Image (tube, rainbow, N blue to C red; front, side, top):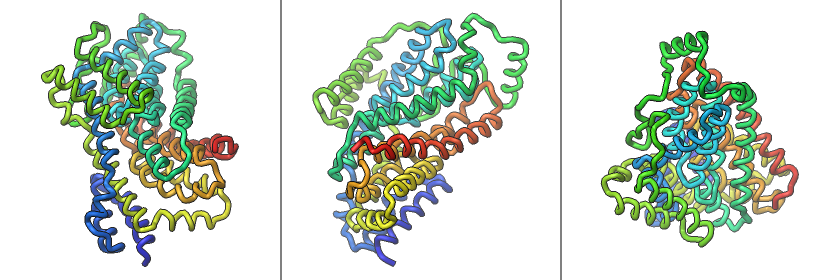
Length: 450
């Protein structure tokens, strides 16, 4: 068996093992890089370690550390309460605000699972209080996190843009970001229409629940659902974050004001002055830590270390694949199919189906490099294809088997958890079927993006 084929089979085996067992895919990828590189390709240890993405590691640590500080000192919680306060009395606006907050947080660099872990319990609390459909509010969180997930300073955006840049392919940060935002915003509109959004326009925050709604709420609570939005904790990131009660004050503390200023400064520095994202994020995080050591204590422990390991491990393995020649080998065989549009559709569906059960970060880290040789032939527009692949792989995170979808199931309130799971599974299956096809049809087929 050739080294190229062996390395591909090893990659497939990694995804299977990581899906079936609670083993970090990044750790498996590092082991795979060591074994495949050493045994199949005769690579030295220095060559294997040379594939480790140092700059990407700094980006991941920097942006997740900054987000951990914002969570620790209550800045994220303040943003949620402030946004809901602005729409007081207009219940119909609450799902839209949740979508916007989720998109904003991922757009400024927070990992989507971390945003879902913190925002979902808060959103379900408001939904339980104002009698908003659990699927409506949950899917607003899920699609919101993906809407902002490909901004130039986000984790996924950094990965995709970095790979295309290293491959010498034309890229567009704006097209990638707007494509993901547009598809997820469209999905959010459909969700809003399907799950009772228009009916919310006829209600105000002063409307109390009917006797029937009270009975339904009690039944849901007996089956594992919760009610209200009293204080509690939110899982995720190696610690807990307090869930604030609606109606509490909106006074912004000094530490929270500095954190907001730091996030704005990060965006300005990266977008306007072309500063390095990772180093700038670490600098802002360290400055915030120095200004308030007690308030930001424990932020390092809240960094998404499993995500860091996953991404860096997969990217290291892909680097070994490039060294072996697997990337070019795959590109040559894919091109042999002879119908570029069919190949593009297959790649999109591979990204969508696998990502629904595994890590979006992991699948993008592997698929984008594998698609580079095919895109280098010039038969399809690389910008459109990369955008379509990214959308296909991310929009399916509503699946209950993905991290974001699982968090929705774990935190659901106001609906029996088993019922919610089945409904989310049906919706996720529909997205897996329709999402990649729509991305391919609207971005790749027209050929308007070179």
